[in-house]
Amino acid sequence: MVLTPAMQAETLRLKEGAAISGRIVSEKPETVFVDVGYTVVGVPRVQVLEIVQDTQAAAAAPVKAQSSSSVEAPASGMFAEAPADTQESPVRELVGRLGEAVVQVRTPGGLGSGFFIHPDGYFVTNFHVIEGETRISVEVYHQKDGQLERRSYKEVRIVAMNKFADLALLKVEDKEAPRFKTVTLGTTEGLVQGDRVFAIGSPLGLERTVTEGIVSTTAREVGGDLYLQTTAQINPGNSGGPLFNARGSVVGVTNMKLTFGEGLGFAIPVAVLRYFLEHRDAYAYDNDNPSNAFRYLEPPSRLKLPLRGAGAPP
Image (cartoon, rainbow, N blue to C red; front, side):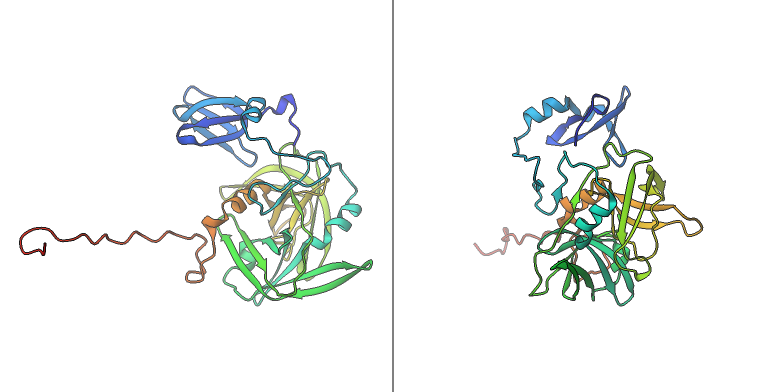
């Protein structure tokens, strides 16, 4: 990500070692409002110890080796970042590079789309695609000798899910599964109305369907949450698939449309997906409680203290 002077970023260092990074959009006597990419957060001033400009934050942060010609894996190790210097390309070229990473997700109750984020078989889809299901399979098209080879994987494990964000992380565990092609996660920083985007998925079961459009708005409020709105056609079966920018990076996870109109599709912003993946342990799937999107810690057992007093053994 390249920051221009108009898009200066700051880091707010908070009490108890916490921090929040983004662009300060407004400062009030009691509150600082920060744009974190997919929403604006109000931070009470009493919690702010220091506001550091991006150049100072970079100097204070640990240095990470970067290469402009390679994909950088973040500390989480679960997904790959899109290189900052990636150039825009025609959709035709991008589809040829990214198509293998997009899959069709099948359950006894229906189907949807998904995409690999890790070569070991970890992939993302919508929670509502797998809700209430444990028998899940994926259809993948592998490139082999210039041809596409369709293959089905039936050993799929649910790793984590968050029904409130409509996201799920799964893993292919077939013994003979190869290393999978993956996508990179981008950012909505700098994404504006009119920017070109495209989706790959399986609308109505039509695998590897590509639809192109533009960003209608980057912050459409629906039911209290913010979504990317796009003119790229989104239909049943697209759910859980990736929404790419013109550089071939994921900027959203398609999940719904307005049924009474056309060109009114919506996607979960990639910042929400990043948060889900980085905190996946908090959303770990529990076989004993499959309908619950959260995993709660067990309460501590009562300590058994030795008796003291009259009649107690010494």
